[in-house]
Image 1 (cartoon, rainbow, N blue to C red):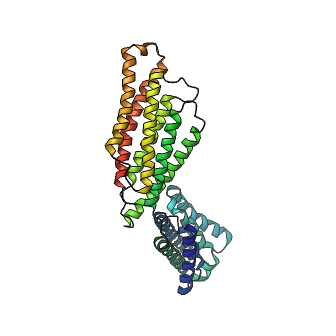
Image 2: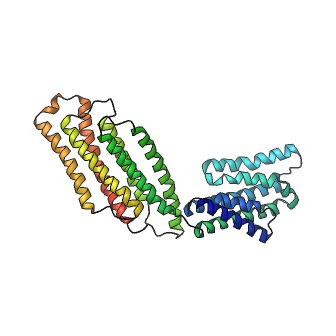
Image 3: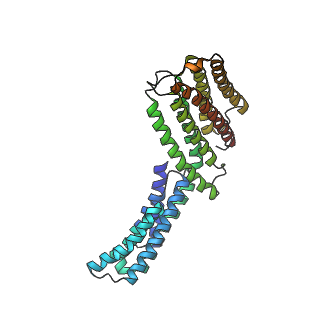
Amino acid sequence: MHALRMTASSLAAFVLAEAFGLPQGFWAVITALIVTQSNVGGSLKAAIDRFVGSLLGAVYGSAVAFLVPHNDTPAQAAALILSVAPLSFMAAFSAGFRIAPITAIIVLLSASGTTLGPLGFATDRILEVGLGCAVAILVSVLVVPARASRSVLDTAGEVAGLLADQLETLAAPGDQAGMTALVVRTRQSLNRLEVLVGEAARERRSRLTDMPDPEPLLRTLMRLRHDVVMLRRAVGELGDQALPAGPAESWVSAARTGAAVLRRLSESLPAGSTAGPSGEMAGAMGDAIGEYRVTIDAMRRAQQTRDLPTETLWRLFGTGFALEQFRRNLDDLVERTGEFAGRR
């Protein structure tokens, strides 16, 4: 579908450039191809960055061409430095300005710019880029449109599923081989989700979707990922001293309960449905954590904690704290999932 949109936008830009008689219509075609992204939100961002950067580069490059004589090579080099240096400095702070120095160079050094004059060439350049941006946005909206706000739910479900996999791996003694790969995949999915949330925000500002704001969903998943990291460190990696038998059994039960809730949420988010009664899921996780607390209290009453190494005590109480934080954020994720129910 993305290939279809890119092909359609390129063809439409070519036809319109020929119809308007633009002298360098290939810039409209190239712009349309670059701006057409995998979803509408991405196309909006690319169009704004491309047009604003091209406008700034064309105006500034024309000003330099008018004010600085550049008839020989040393003069051209000086004008080039004067054009590129400030625009590149701006591009270092904002990626949206990356096209600006390129446009300034084209206006300054292009043979067409010499023939048409800097002002005429810059005007044509802006018209060509603007046409390409407009075509790309229209094609993204009209030709098999893909919404970033919908991709947010798919990716959020993927993150929840990966967090569930991490918990299940932690709960299986001696089965830590795939943990590193799961951690990397979770981080990559969260990074992709953060990009999609930004693109979905542009769709909401442009009134192209009525989805709720996905920013709270991203924040909740990031907190849950942090909770799982804390649990992984508290329980210990392979080769570290394990928890005592009683707390270990309660921890495994709590981890598997949390993984089961995350698994249901990972299926509900892409489908745009609720994961079930929130009170039921919160109660199951609360009961599992309560069992862990009961086990620790029993050990304290029996004075079994007096003979434990300090590192083991840290693991016992650190695991309890991390589980409680995990439960709170899991309840929040259940609520966030309910906000998107029926909005697929």
